[in-house]
Amino acid sequence: MKTLTLEAPAKINLTLDILGRRADGYHDMRMVMQAVSLGDTVTVAETTGGFSLLAEGISLPAGKVTLEQLAAEAFFRRLDRLMPGLEVRLAKRVPAYAGLGGGSADVAAVLRCLRALYAPDLPRQALEEIGLEVGSDVPFCVRGGTCLAEGRGEILTDLPPLPDCAIVLCKPDFGLPTPELFARVDGADLGSRPDTAAMEAALARGDLAAVAACLGNVFERMLTEDEGAEIRSIKEALLRHGALGAAMSGSGPTVFGLFDDRQKAVRAEEALEGRYRQTYLAAPVKILENME
Ligand code: C5P
Image (cartoon, rainbow, N blue to C red; front, side, top):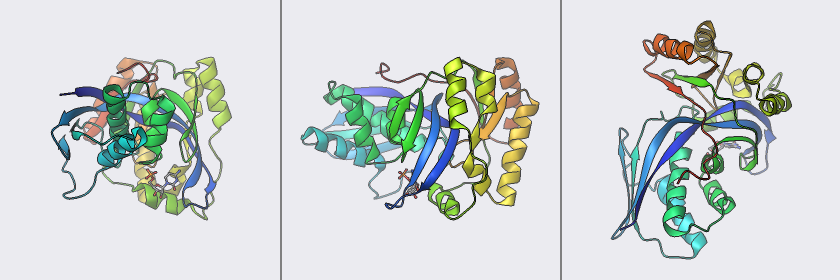
């Protein structure tokens, strides 16, 4: 029976800008996205029938069709083949509802496993299109590396890789549902916007300090006073410990800091994890093309 295990790297947003609401209810985005080494491990195995999803560490919604199943169905529809019995096993490490794309990364890893097992010649572009049927961040998670993401998040342009660095990620205990944050954006004044062009130029120069100086996320301006105060206090703690820059990722609430010194990053992680259980040390992950 066919079986394959792949890593499912989470993502952070080096920049996140929202250009406007679209007629279909989604928002047009301009984001610089980066895959990170904090990730889940995903195994896809062929079985004699049906679809099942097993996850350590998280409880699965009973009787609900999961995004993993929707992705697998879309994959075999695209191949015009009957879906075999499949079991997907997740070893979860990425916190959920955290702005790190953990769910999207799992779906993307399922698709990468299915391609390797059943259709190795299927172009990556096709896999990204199938991913978009399930979620806006899935195409980037199929690709990994460093990308400019536009449209809903599916129009991807590869960028030069983030220079080698240590990344500390810290998730405070409150949740910020993505649709609710997008709803807060509508009609709101987003104020000054992240400078995406400056971020692209900093990446092109391989200048980590300049990348860190350009980090920005418009969702940070949509937070309540209490949420904003907690995000600011984590950013300040990261900067005090030597981060070159810090920002919230995606629709939050995870905050990350970029360090050019691993020792400083380790000390920042140790200092923050006393207060925030979900604190992690990670590194950038390059494009995933050859990782299967
Ligand atoms: O695409 P996905 O299902 O991950 O999106 C979750 C929700 O986030 C959408 O239902 C929508 O409310 C919001 N969203 C958006 N614009 C995007 C991506 C997501 O408004 N580009």
